[in-house]
Length: 196
Image (cartoon, rainbow, N blue to C red):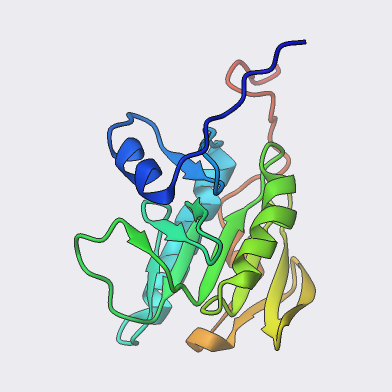
């Protein structure tokens, strides 16, 4: 079997290369990793997250950012989290940030392993990250990791739970992030039709 080997890239090479690409890529420390497309459910959760946090953070020093900014983690990898909160000034022209306080990922079947294992380790290794929230996409639920010394504590949230983000002075009902999502609707993909 003949396998193509990836030529390692430096972070600087990746950043210059990605600027010229029509699609977005993350950097795993060795080379580019293509970003996959999302679903309507994923997009709705992201929009609810942005709406809920932006309003609650108004007038405070922290600010919510969506998945347009790159996050360079401690080991040099580059990620596009579904959302993050930064509490230090960010230059208007910045495309890469290094110090979010809270990071959010919306889990999907194609990214769950990376989000739960790889990114959890990367975010834990990044000193600024105090809380990592993984939001389920197919039901109301979340797993929340919080910094505790050199490790993480974790909490599993269900529909009736409150998502506490003490690092940024915010609490919100977890169900608010799933507002308008019908989990009973068909999820047969782009070709799905309503049954008669």
